[in-house]
Length: 474
Image 1 (cartoon, helix red, strand yellow):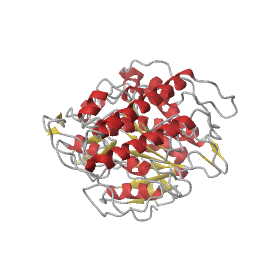
Image 2 (cartoon, helix red, strand yellow):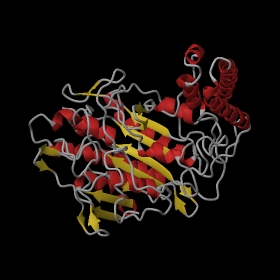
Image 3 (cartoon, helix red, strand yellow):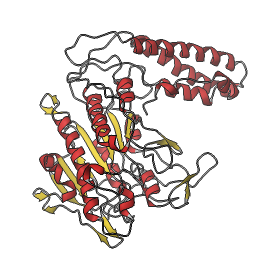
Image 4 (tube, helix red, strand yellow):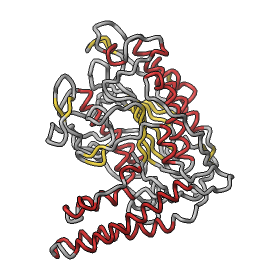
């Protein structure tokens, strides 16, 4: 997640052994999100927030799945019970009904659905460095493609979340992307959804307090006097020392490699020099974003099942503030994991989510209660986003929120996945609509997300290359 502090320590011995080519690049990757808070902007940027909700639509068995299709026409419709809490925000929703998950590969549906959710790419088989149980003993490795948030964050240009390139020394936000999660468990193919590329999962920050302290170090709400943050200053000094250390090591390594490798070392050195310039520039505090409000620091959580609702609200508050303070413009929030074993005791349940999906009983009523509860959490988030004024609109109006799952149904069907879109993406998305896209590949949705964020592409992932976007969405 967002290159956490523990990741900046780089072994000089490892770098020397690798002739500075592998570990040097890793060190630079961990140094990229520097404390360089963005100032005011005349045009509010587009933002993207991807949210994962576990499991599919409630089903008794393979052939008995609830029909969660909205009732009515494109512009005049009613939401199914699993989405009923979103009713106050219906004018700012798009419901792309009927999509089939563009996913497959190793393991069972939960695993390859998770890997393909935001990538439309195949889940690899096990390898020496990645060998996981993808369901009932079926082994998997990691996913094989970059997720749409990472693709968007790497892009740059007018109308996109970022106008400046990822290697520009003067970044617009402290973090290009931020990955948050709530009770996502240890890394494996069932528990990770965001990928930098093939075999490169990105792990979310799952501790709300740690996320708060990392993201808002040195940040003040709009209108407040800037304060000196000793922790941020200490971290900046540590990073400057590490840059100096790596520069010296690269100079020594240059004497030990052939001329054919000079260009690689020069590229690493140029990256370090750019980071040094950014560190020096970051010493001067920047103006806060126009609508920045830093939330209260969350209390320390034990990560128990009973803490799940409070942790979700804390992470959602952090996400809203990270957007409003322009800490980042691209974010993901993973709620639980595939095979979710959260026990929703606050709903009166005595069996956990996944167990109820497969205990041989008709659990559609309880499973619909769980889905409606998740919709209540999404409604809370939308309300918080919509409460932030941004000139002639709101933060929600300038953001695209997409809620997705790894399955179409709890019976492991991959058809008719309950996706929900919200927000206007700064006018790019026409909301208040229900669209029938029955049996179409969800890769088209990912292409549409990219286009809504300003990218010119007709292909995402390796399973349906060249799929194009969903018709009528963009």
